[in-house]
Length: 138
Ligand code: 5GP
Image (tube, rainbow, N blue to C red; front, side):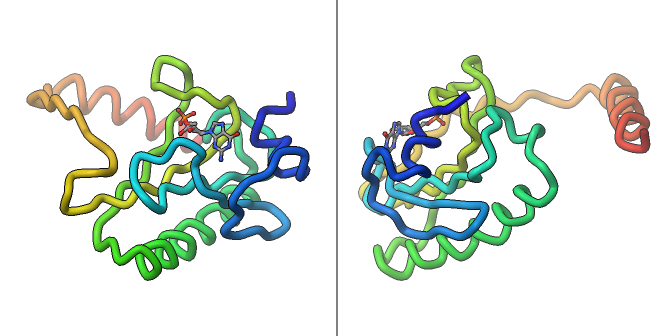
């Protein structure tokens, strides 16, 4: 399934490109939350992070700090958020994996966060952690 990002990767839609290698592309978000708001996108067409191949994930992991560092240097921002949404319920609009790099400025521009923490329930957390560990061990 070709998303709008696949069309950008193919060069069918223009973008303000920041970085590209065989597996990853990065470009400025068309509706930025702040100057320098960028998207780092694997070329592999998957909607969710957990569907990425290890090869794509490693390339993405290598590109993220490079692109973030360059954005900080050029914009002068000293703080930023990295946001990665999976699924419409989690506010994902484009069904193609992407990481947002969003500089945060002293004027408040950037990502606003509504964070509502709760107290952990240790017995249920321990049970959940054991199940995930079992799943990861295969
Ligand atoms: P999501 O909510 O899926 O994490 O974010 C998708 C992001 O992609 C949004 O911030 C939106 O502004 C950006 N976006 C959507 N279409 C385009 C496009 O055609 N070009 C660029 N550069 N960004 C896009």
